[in-house]
Image 1 (spheres, chains in turn red, brown):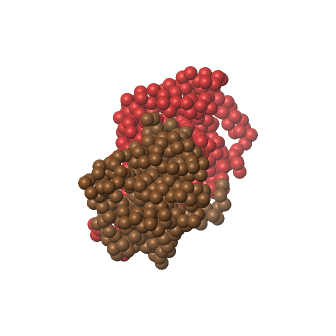
Image 2 (image 1 turned 120 degrees about the vertical axis):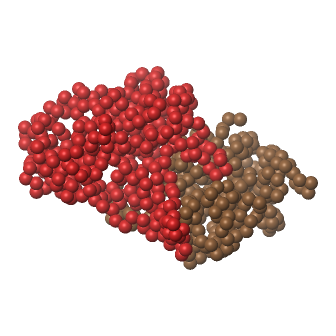
Image 3 (image 1 turned 90 degrees about the vertical axis):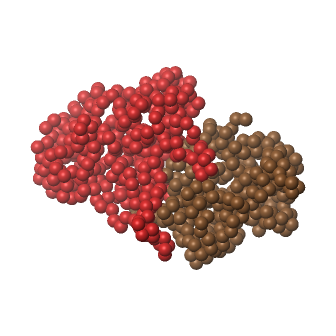
Length: 348
Length: 288
């Protein structure tokens, strides 16, 4: 079975079933925003949501993660996590799936990161395709992440009274097999999918003024652009943009020794390149001084460096950095400013 | 995509787990720097290249990158010389013979010794820069016939800040290494040069095409030293430096050491000027 259908009235039944199989995390409302949370009551799951405050990265790259358990005397180190538990991310947008693919590239590159690999191995992703814009901050069409491009086990598409379910892996197959309310898709369902996708094509338009190759080219020439001074003047260095980014993975390592002063745990915790001590060394030499150069670094880590190194952009277009910015720095505005003068066709 | 079996194997071990390193010798060598000789379990060799670093752990205080100052030809142990400059290094200074630290590594790319065979070598060391360079100097001493003329230019703040003073005398005698030292601030007993290290470079007599220049020192030193070395017509790829950065993992993941798109912990810390000249900033100040 490659394409299946699930009637909307059976969604909660399926969620109950998934909940029994593994830890289930899904979006739900929190005041007027949305968050991924463990599902206690399946009725709280909300599939009509704008990007959650934090991306689901908190589950596969936790904010605080044990690395090593240690004892000082005698000197001993052991595995901090004995086993990794199966979990399902439910209702993930395609932008966030792109974020997971970026993380895969980082942590699979030699030397591999075993914590990430182990966790990824126990993760199942059930996506939901967006059919219209979440809000004005998204730039998923320019980043080409508004349509599903793999990287999931199951993808759901709302076609009215039913969801079309695209099964993309054996893991995914296992989550629908044997359930009488999930049926093979018929021709009429596939036609409905086509018509939904046709309508979607009209709903999404590139959000950047120029196509991606021009954005890259503009970045290649904009290291000394005055735009960074402007962005730096606005920035308050709160680090929100990096905390909410699905492709930011910088971390710090901290030790937490127990009261015995002998045993403890070494953790890694999320860190932000926007903090002023991020690139400072012991003698107080700072290799990235100023908010302007730190913001520039953040943008270059999305639109330039990973393209050179990993062959992909590390912006997913989710819009979280703009949504969460205390100083209202907008990614779309910054890209517009950087690419001003890079007309659609012409080279500068 | 790597094979699943290989991946599963890699998921079993953790590169974040330090090895046990026992301090077998510890000695204050200046007011601020302490020297350590460390043995790994079973006296195995660290098997590093000159110029590489280790991540040194003291549980409860954390971990930091530290240059190795012994040569891989010094077997059965390795050595570090560390300035008391932060919470971890201060904790390290409180340790002595018999104490145990955690070691991960070695990490990074060292000095390109294989390419340096047969060349004359100028070593330019500013302040603590002599620490990683000692690894190279000892390597050269132990393979003396593989290298041409060796000149060491050492700069330090005052005569009492000079590291490896007694060893330097031995280098000059035993290995026919030319040694020239300058201090920023001389004291009445000082008989050597006074002034910046850049002042020593114009005076060296070299054949640039067959010379490697290796410079390590504080970031502010590089632009001046590199400018002098270029004036000497040494090719860009034969000018070698080592860069210091904040590091948390050594594995090209944590992001702290990133210099534009390059992870210093993996691609460096040793770079040739040829690699660095196209950086737009973030490596050292380039404009004079």
